[in-house]
Image 1 (cartoon, rainbow, N blue to C red):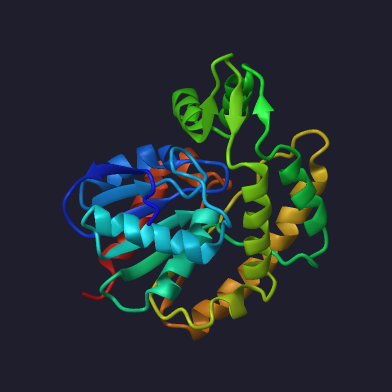
Image 2: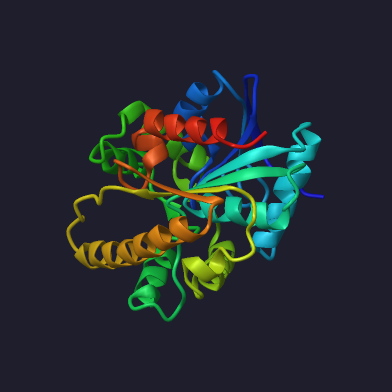
Length: 286
């Protein structure tokens, strides 16, 4: 049994489990979790190979789901609404698929967690970009650089710094080990491409738990040299939006929404994220 690193934010009420994105950690949820704890019991979990959780090999979605379930059992949380951002959003949906009974997965929230298959135009270039820095040793000024990038998105510097430090490991010489490692990143990409290949509509077949699927409503200005990725992500997001609109008309258990933020919405607009999640939970059947 592999138990993952957890932060228990306390609170009373419906139980929420918060999952972060690729290369991030549970600290991304600090601001939203503090708000949600006013009316919910809130736990956040570091995914395998991220933050302070142990690595696993091979890194697979079913293994991540199993480790989350074991971890929640160990913390006395057998049933919860699972809320995930980015990679965590895909894992949240798969957690709901693997646990169709209300006794464990009451519902799932996916915040901008959608992916593409290997054959999607431009997918290979994105994979190469991610792998270029996967598991790398970053210089001491890594945190300062990442904070600067976040501030340009409107994320407060103190929030960005805490989240950046929690998502990497500081080495004795002042440099930083980025997470997850390269081998785990390769396995994570394999899993993402597997889930994304059939498209959103087919991917969600067989998930009967209530789902809230949320997209980012804004695109950041591309960094110099990254215009290609801005074009790629805008094209993909439009395709996902079209599929979600159709699903919301035909699947009564699926709700679709949008947040006026860029992809790191739980860092950028934690109040809006908390409000949306709390409203979804209030509307769930008993």
